[in-house]
Structures are given as structure tokens and as C-alpha cells.
Amino acid sequence: MKRAFNKQLLVVFLVIIFISGCALFNQSKYDKFTHENFAFLKAPVIKLYESYASDEISKCFKKYIFRKLDQFHEYEKWKEGNENTVEQIVLFKKMLTRHFEERNNLGVPWSEVHMQNKLNNVLEAIDLMLRTEMSKNK
Image 1 (cartoon, rainbow, N blue to C red):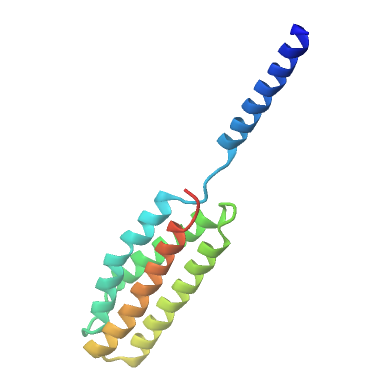
Image 2 (cartoon, rainbow, N blue to C red):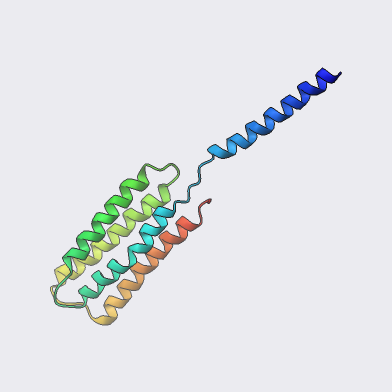
């Protein structure tokens, strides 16, 4: 009888260890690095859009932002369950490209009001990416 009890105790103990071990392998989708990347993108985006209201477009900020977005895309596309973040990066890059081409083809600076409207839209997109990342399991 004592042996049967010991076997049952051993089985229960092994089941508990197995269940707790599975929890160790459950990887979180939230990534602090991704969140920081999106947050740190705001300042150069603001500088770029401020240049759209001036005579000279800041091409160095444009290059920096697009290079960073390419890096973010490469980093994110290989993470499992990250399709939404990858799609948001692609859409965000298309938005920035559209705005850049609009300003570049116009040939004259945007008005301050127009620049602020476009900038607000872009900052809302960044905030949406941040909220998406924060909503993931931690």
C-alpha cells in the first residue's frame, strides 16, 4: 500500500513538474526592444515633418527613418505571431513614402497647418503601433 501511495505521489510530482516546465517554454510575444524602437522613432519623424514646412527637406532624417523601418521589419518578420506588427510597419512606411512624394513633387514647403495635420496622422500611427505592442502578452 505504501508503494502504491509513493507511485501516485511520484506521478503527481512529475505532472506538476511537467506543467511548470511547459510554462517556461511559453514565449511572450511582447518585446521591449520593439516598443523602444517605435517610441524612439517619434523624434526623427517630427524633425522630418518639420522640414516639410521649410524650403529644404531633411534627407538625412528620411534616410535614417527608412533605414530604421527596414531594420524593424527584418527583426519583426522572423518572430512568430507578429504578423500584425509587420503589416503595421509596411503600412507606416507606405504612409511616410506617400507624404514624402507629395512634398517632394509639390516643390514648395507645406503650410504649417498642413504639416501639423500630416504629422498628427503619423504620430497616431506610431502610437497605434506602440499600443499594439503593449497589448501583447508580457
